Image 1 (cartoon, helix red, strand yellow):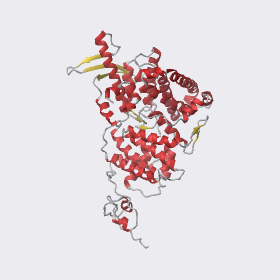
Image 2 (cartoon, helix red, strand yellow):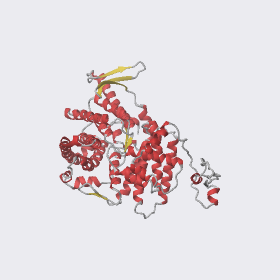
Image 3 (spheres, rainbow, N blue to C red):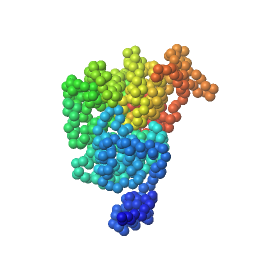
Image 4 (tube, rainbow, N blue to C red):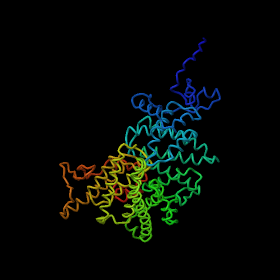
Length: 544
């Protein structure tokens, strides 16, 4: 029996240019382009400035086990790469597949991540590098929890992710004048991946720029939504839907409305025609999305207006408000009827989707009702109770989702808590909403819970400082459950009692400005245009 001669083992190159590392040969690391590549007529792909630490330890073993029992769709595509992959890229791609994709799917079942983005990451180099960037940054962020703007990320995974994002952008620029009909879809998918990367890093201005860039591409495609909810679009409908949702979020953070597909549908067609397609709870999100994508921008625009500006255009604004409220009321009636009929028959996933849709719709309904009201006038008892009910509804949803991934592009929880806390006259409800947001600790698209909780807390402090001045001037009685306590160093603290998750709690709060918020604001160029900062009077306090 003949024994085959074993090939000599070649040690994998751990330094040098990317091409030599893929060939597993020693690189001479000559400047600009290595001699190995030039002498053999190969393209030298350059040197990676950052290399990942060795893959070892319990976390890596856990990830390997997860890869071994991967999602079937992921397993099939895992062998479909059309180019060589470095070990570092392979690790980040694996993290993207088995962690980031599962996270980004969000609260609703979507084909965007499991089907489209995953497929393109194996066929389009620009999407491939953008996906690796998200996998690397997600890995770095996963260890540091929610990141505030300006917070430095020193992890090597973060720097490797930035390098990969740069490779993706370089590849897109090379195809700038491409006539390939799929190129627009590639650009839009890369935009979505870059948005996720920027939001994980707390870079709001960059994320807004990517959203606006994507919307500009979509504007040129003559996209329309049919009364059935389907899109007439040359690009995948799930891309269009995601950008419409991101537009509805980003308008609160300084962008405008550039893409009017849903507002055109809601304003042109009788809502009853569209509501008639709502026959099952599983269709709830599809039916309410055009209303959400139209109503939230209206609320954001109203919050930025001064009372004088609202009064100057009140007739037009009020007419638009009533139209949106009427449509939302009809939708909520239909949702309530279907929930009572068939909620118990839904799967856990379908119940979760229904819960999130319900929270989001009640949040918008409350935001629309209060959008044109004076902030100097207390809410009516009915609206005050509605704000408390909204916090309780969100609390119940959070209890069901405690172990949910830390990032998603969907944003139902934070808007609900923010709207209730920003307008309720009850200080205990405000503290409860802020605490729930800190417990939730997620990045929901543009809604970073750490930052939004800081904003709400500073708005609460502004209201409490005003209340204390009034108390000193008039000796008025304090609301139940609230007590001011002076400290020996000249600071003043306030104790606020509240009830959460069935137990009594109390929050001790200094009336000094929140350092975390005011440290973050200089890193947000668009802060002066944020609806939440302007409506709560914080921008003025920050000098923005």
